View 1 (tube, rainbow, N blue to C red):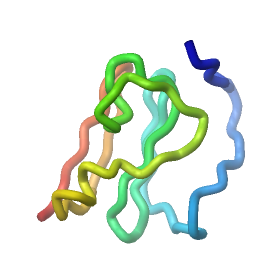
View 2 (view 1 turned 90 degrees about the vertical axis):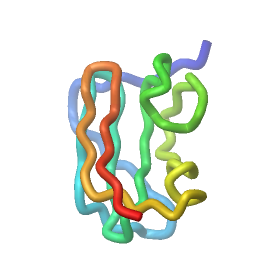
View 3 (view 1 turned 120 degrees about the vertical axis):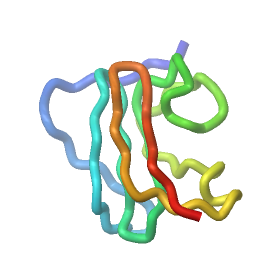
View 4 (view 1 turned 135 degrees about the horizontal axis):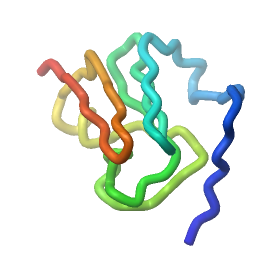
Length: 91
């Protein structure tokens, strides 16, 4: 099992390519951000697939949700629940 750092305090995170974040949502053990370009990045505990990467792997590194990019979808809004992530998208 992968070790995931769970922090009870804010921490700086480096996103790829100096992306600008427009929206942030935090679940109980995962986080999601939407960039100004409409890309969704997620990280944290992924046991229930809540990171959106097509698996249940956890990660301390922010990763872009490729499913949205591959299908020409732009993330507009994100809400993280305890073990879920809800995303409103535009085509």
